[in-house]
Image 1: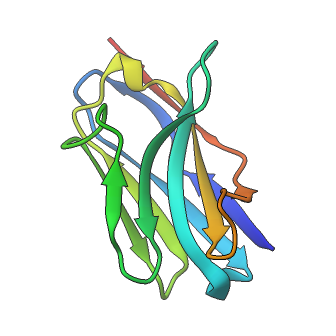
Image 2: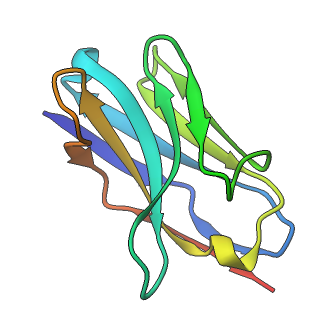
Length: 119
């Protein structure tokens, strides 16, 4: 089992930057991949970015490519999402998630952190 706790959300203005973080605990040595997802009011949860825990390879949704950067610190078991040039449409609850190599899906989720971008 892996426990995930997000932090760093808040209220910012159009064009501002914000960093959200995810702290992992528990059986983190078996984590293969972690990712960020978001869910806006009235919309389905969508993929934002992902990172391979050991190799560091990353992949982004087109909507955030060039503005967001995902990173991880293996020693601290943390994952960050640096968000620049934020837009009102980035407003959502941001969730971090983790999966083991033996699973095809993200099995572990945090409680989410609210990011609100005002125009």
